[in-house]
Image 1 (cartoon, rainbow over the protein chains, first blue to last red):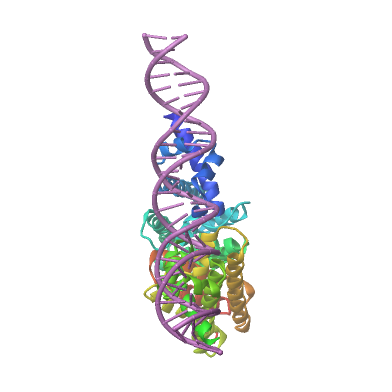
Image 2 (cartoon, each protein chain N blue to C red):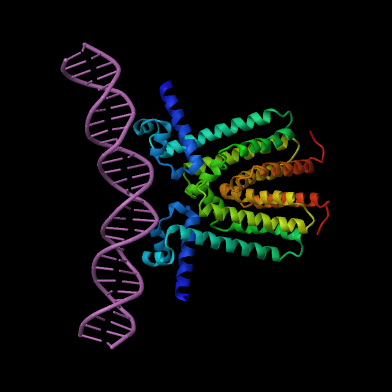
Length: 190
Length: 190
DNA sequence: CAATCTCGAGAACGCTCGTTCTCACGAGAC
DNA sequence: GTCTCGTGAGAACGAGCGTTCTCGAGATTG
């Protein structure tokens, strides 16, 4: 078990880096084999097909995203600070060497409207994020509409930062979010 | 000439619909041939390779976008109204039957970070849009920062509407934009 | 009519890629 | 030592796709 788990982790890590950097359809199983150092036979014994590997990669990204977001928010005591921590988290991420946008948005662009597994995972990830923002907004005394506005800023920052290769979009998103929050909460909140 | 121009238009229209609906790499030249009704020979006589066809499709999208945006803004007398007209334009677009997001964002996700023609066109389109918003913002008495915030809302609305299949994100973006504009302009402006 | 040219339809070619198969090698069982 | 089994390396297979080639029908010219 531990042996298979480690192989699994190696494969997912290798595939994740390649898919994120080059796009999913640009990366063949041969590249995953070379990067992971495992044989095709072993890869296929763990992931019966490429789509299962893709799903595993996206799932892992979700966990990393959720963990990172939770960590960033944990540094803030109240919901207002936690909402703003989202944009600080984005800023850190945008500044990482290999940042290339949100892999969910990217794969959505890749796979067309085919209502397949990837589409479901992308929608789920975005919906869950929106729910998180909505919860924090309500806790802070804001509305669901405020939450949607804040989510828009986060989404826009991700694509703009990726396309323009400019991490400072996170700062603009944060400033706009702060203004909208204060406006919705009557200009003074914790 | 006219004959070739018409063939060219037919090919671009067919390719545009297919690329937008299914993603560029999912659509082969055979599909373009079937949809356009022209032979492969004729297609290749006009577009020497697929990438030239892709570039033509993206260029055409740019023109459609620019025209549509200009029309929407033309209905408004002042820069504030013109800024908000952007989101009305987005709303109309989101409600169209076959809306599937911004083809530039989608192709960016498809083609990886390969600094090729597609990447350049995507960056150019976004940069030009940001410049337009900045010009309007300054005309309205706002700042470049306000312009960036408004651009973020527009970008976020496009991806959120596409992924969630929900046109009402345009309304949220518009409301947020109005709040940010009024805040930046001292809560009362034309 | 004969010769030539144009162009569409579809086959063909070469390449990539997902997936499977072959084969040989090394480890354990007796 | 020998047999068997699992496994890795790489070949092989089949499909899809970008691109080119072949062939034949119809138009044009003399």
